[in-house]
Amino acid sequence: MKSVLARLRRFLRTPWLSDPRWAIGLIVAGAVMILGVALCGPSSVTLKLGPRTSYLPPWYLPVGMVSLSEWVAVPALWLAIGMGALGLLIAWRAVNSGWRPNNRRLFLLGSLLSILTSLVPPMTSADVLMYAAYGRLQVRGLNPYDITPAEIFRQEYDPLLVWTERPWQDTPSVYGPLASASQWLAAWLGDGNMHDTVFWLQMFALLPFLVIGAIAVVLAHDDHKIQTRAILFTVLNPLMIWSVLAGAHNEALTLVFAIVGLLFIRKSPFVAGLGIGLAGTVKVSLVYYGIAMAWGYRRDWRKLLMLVVGAAIPLGIGYGLIVPRALLAASRNTGYISAGSWAPWFQWLLTPIVGDFVTHSLIGWAGWAMMIVVAWMLSRVLPWRLVPGVPDDEDPRRDPLTIAVRTAAILTASWLVTSPYTLSWYDLTTWVPLGLMIASRLDVLMMWRGLWLSVAYVTGRSVQFSEAMQGIANFVRDYVCSGAQILVLVLIVHWWWTWGHELPKLPSWVRLPSRGRVREPVAKIAA
Image 1: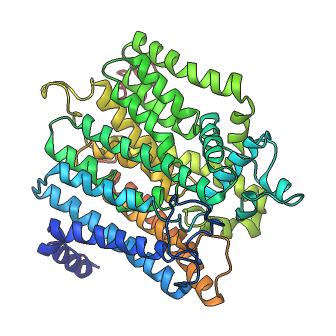
Image 2: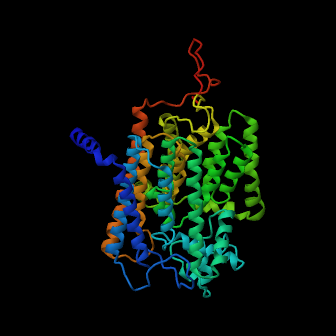
Image 3: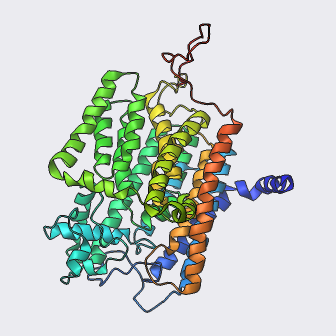
C-alpha cells in the first residue's frame, strides 16, 4: 500500500499536472467533444425536441444526416467529462502553484463555452422536457401541482406534452412558484412547440449561470487568485457546464438570487433577505444559504431580524398568497433514493431483511444524521479565509460575509455528500462559495464526486439501450459511482481525524454531575 501511495505522489509531481496549458486544453477539448455529440442531433444521449418551426436554437444537423450509435455517443461523453474534470484539477493545481492568468480572458472563455453549450440540444436528462410540460399545463389554465402531463396527453393530443419522457410524466410539479413562473413564460414564448420552449428554458439556465459567475468575481474584489478560483469554479467549471447547462437544469435560476443576497450581506441585511427569499421560491433546498446568512448575523439581532423580514416577504407572497400548494408539493421530493449515491449499497443489504418501507425510512434518517456529523467535521477542518472587500486585519470569524460563505459551503457540501438522493447539478450550490475560499481538500473531493455522478448519468435517460450498454451503465452507476460517493464520506472522516478529530463541546451553562467535588464549566463551543 505504501508503495502505491509513493508512486501516486511521484505521479502527482509530474510537471504537466500543474501546467495551465494542459488545463485549458483539456477543458476546451472536452467541451468541443460534448458540442459535437449534441450537434449530431437526437440519439440515445441527446433529447428529441419535436419539429423545428423557427430558426431559434437549439441547433443541430438535420435528422438522419448523422446518426450516432450508443457505442459512440456514450463513450465520447464519458471521455469528454473525464477530460474536463482532469483539466479542472490541473487548473486548480496551477493556481495553487502560482498561476495568475488574465482573468478577463478566462471569464470570456468560460462564458463562450457556456453559451455554446446552451445553443445545442440538451443531453442525458429529460428534466427540461418536464419543465416545459409544467409550463404548458399552466398556459392551458391547469395547475401543475395537481395535474400531471400524462393525465392530459393520455386523453388528448398536445403538440408539446407528447414529447415528454419518462420517468416523471406522472409526477406533479415539485418546484416553487418562481420556478413555475419561469416555466409558464418559456411555454408561452414557445407557443406549444417543444423545441422553442426548450430554447427559452436553456436561456433561463444560461443567463443566471453567467450572472452567478460575474457576481462571484465581484465578491472576489481585487484578489487575483480568488477571482481565478471564482471563474474556474463557475463559468469555466466543466463539471457545472455539463451538469447545469448541457441538461438545462434550473439550479442556476435557483442559486442566482441567493448569490445576489451574498453580494448585499455586508451592505443591507434586508436586501440580502429578499435575495434568499426569492431563491426559496424557486427551490426550498436553498434554505441552507438562509441558515448560513442567519449564522453570519447571529451576533447582531437587528441585522438578523432585517434578514428574516426580507426573506419572509417573497416567501410569504409566493407560498402564502400565490401558490399555497407549492410548499406542500416540494415535500414530495423527499424520501427518494438515487442511483449513484451512497445509499443503494445499503438499500440492497437492508431490503431483504426489514422490507422496502423500513429501509427507506432508515436510510432517510441516516442521511440526516450523517449530514449533522459531516457538517461538524467540515466546520473543524475547513480553513478560515477572509472574503475580500474589507481590511485584511479584520477577523474573518466576525465578518458576516465570510461566515455566510464558509457556512454555506459546509452545509451544502454536507447535504450533498450525505443525501440519499443527490445529482451532479446540485453541486453548483457548493462550488460558488468554495470559489471565494482558499484551496482545501474539499475542492478535490467535489471534483471527484462530480466526475462520477456526471459519468453515471450519461445513460440516465429512460430510453432503450442495448443489453450490453445497459449492463455497463448499471455497473458504472450502481457500483463505481456509489463506491466513489462512499469514498468521499470516508475521506472526510479521515480528514477530520488527522486534523485532531475535535469533538463538540458542551456549552458553559451545562454542568456535568460532580462526584464529591466541583467541576469547572465546560468551555464554550468554538465560533
